[in-house]
Length: 379
Image 1 (cartoon, rainbow, N blue to C red):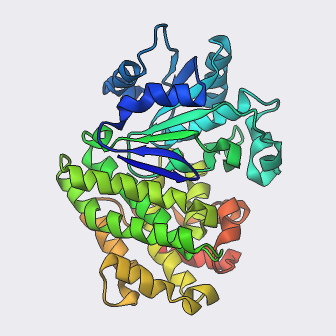
Image 2: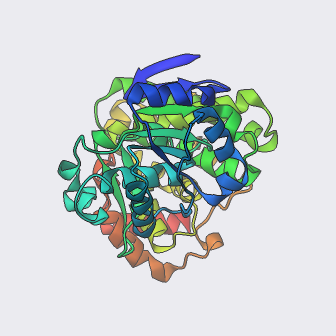
C-alpha cells in the first residue's frame, strides 16, 4: 500500500476501496452524497462503494452526470446535496463525475452561479474553505481529477471553463485499479491518451517545478509502455495499475499549467460536448508539440529529448509522429475531419482557445494565426 502525501492524501492499491469508511471518518464526512453517472451505477460499482461505506442510513446518490459535466447538472446535484442535508461528497467515476462533484461542492456552499467561480471570471478568489469536502474514487485512468485542483465544466452559455482553487482538491483520493478492469477498450484507449497528454503538456509548460517535471516524466514512462497492453488485455493488472498511476501523476503535475492542447480541446469540447476530451487531446498533441519545440524553455532544457527518452524513442523528432501512430494503433481518430469537425468551425475554436486559462501557460505564445495553423495540421 502506497500512502502518498503530495497535494492530497492518496490511497493507491488493488482493493483500496475498502478504506472508504475510514477515510470518511478521518475527514469528518458523516452524511455523504455520492455523485456518479448511470453507467457506473449500472456496472454495479456504486453498490461496491455503498458496501465499503457500510452506512447505517440511506445514502443519497446523484447519477445524472453527463459525459461533459455542465452547469445544469451542477444545479441538480446541489439540490440533492441540500435536500438530504449532506456534509460531503463521494465522487465515483471518471473525470466527468469527479469534476461535477467539485462543482457541486463549491456551489452548495457558496452564493452565486457556477459562472462566478470560473477562473476566466476571476472566480478563484471567491472559492473558500467552506467548500464541501470531496473523496474521489476514479474508475478510469485518464483525467487524474482525483488529485487535481480544478474542475472543467460547461456553463449555460456554452463555454467550457475551469473552476480552480486549492479548496477544490479532493481531501482524499482512493485509487483502486481493480475498478478499471472492466473498462471498455475504446474508453481505456481514450482516457489513457488523456493521461499521456497531461504528462507531456504539463512537462512542457515553462514554470520552474523540477518535482512536477519528474513526476510527469515518470507518468509518461508508465503510460506509454502500458496503454496498448491495457487496451488489448483489459485483465492485465500490471497494465491497469500503471495506467492509473500515469493518470494520477499527470494531474499531480498540473500545478505547472497546461497549454495549447487543452485550450483547443476545451474550446472544441464546449462547442460539441459529445467529443471525448482525451481523444481531442490525442489529435491535437502532434501539432502542438511541433509548435512548442521552438520555445526557449523547451530548447534550453532539452525537453523534447527528455520526452523521447521517457517514450523509448531514439530521435526526439519522432515524439509527435509516434503519438499519432499510437493513437491510430489504439483505434482512435487521428484527425479532426474524421470526427466531424469542419474548417468553418475554426474561427470559433480559435476564439475560445485564446480565452481559455490553459492558453496562458503554454511554453510559447500562440497567436490567432498560430492556432489556425495547429488546426490545419490536425485536420
